[in-house]
Image (cartoon, rainbow, N blue to C red; front, top):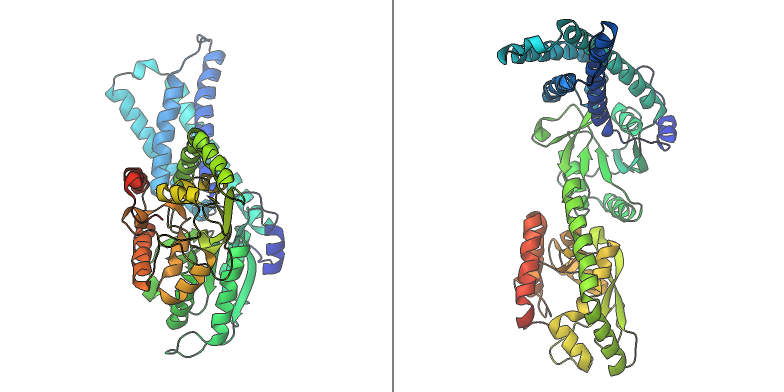
Length: 483
């Protein structure tokens, strides 16, 4: 730890005013290294030529030298982990590493100059000055960065990341790791204390299960991003019980460190400040994967709305002329992380069912209107869901969302049903392009659909989404289970 430890409450109060994500510190160090090296290289060459009456026209050679130095220097430091925030705090490591890397880079530069026989094109005084001053600037910059990080830690200036902490009774007061998390911007929305530990062989106690259900509800409503467990690692059974219940959440779950770590060393390690956690479960998609999927959804859905607007207008007019009632039908569905949203569809029935009991559509259903029959058979009733995609509640591809009433029923009957919530629901999905759409009169048929949905969640790729969309288009004219 660094200096005197403030209380968790004081650190939390300051951290709630955070401004900078802790993970950005390493990238800032890289960016400033680049600016410092390039500026030193160019300025020293320019100053030397002006002072010693060299020609003052622009000379780009030292820009190339700066780029060469930075590329090699940053590669060496990155390979040795010196851009990790916890190492940026350690000057006893940083300064020797910087000097060693700089010497290696200087030797590489000199070797390149002599190998290509271009030594006469560079001033030895200017080059030596650039190398010496560059190393000094980097060392001074790292000292300043370390001092700023120390102050930022104590002031809690890092941007907040909302978390839930589950702690064994009596562990919170002696936990330095949690304090470190708070200083790094991890803001506990609420801390839950496990009082009834139960036995080593029994399942989760009723009080623990109630607490975990409250955690699940809070995480869905409070925009929680991660969960941390703080218990003695010797209580492996308790950790497994908590994790088995929390697996329903599409959120990372981390175990804060204890001395008894042998059983969990195979898990990926997350570095947070000067502490580490073992990642017991990762989010379904990484940030880059979510960004790619969302960008594709926005572009494709926006293009679809523009191109299909005339067809949607015609469908709206026909619905209005065919029967009384609204053009659009909305119904509560469960989306990502089980959150409720209103799905949009063209009205295809004479009824607008949305409650605790909803009857699935069957073949020759008397509730379906004449225009609705055509819309359902061609799946054109799903087109308004493009606006759900643009709004972020749905994706073009994902597990099809079921009515809330059906979810409540099947969560009790089908194992792992709730794992479908790990991805945004889609207009089309892996189950649908494999013939598992429409009515599900038996639990066995729903189990097959859930199995296909979970396969998609566990094997997602961008190319898989494109494949599903392509198969959706090919299967569109010959659908037999849409009615």
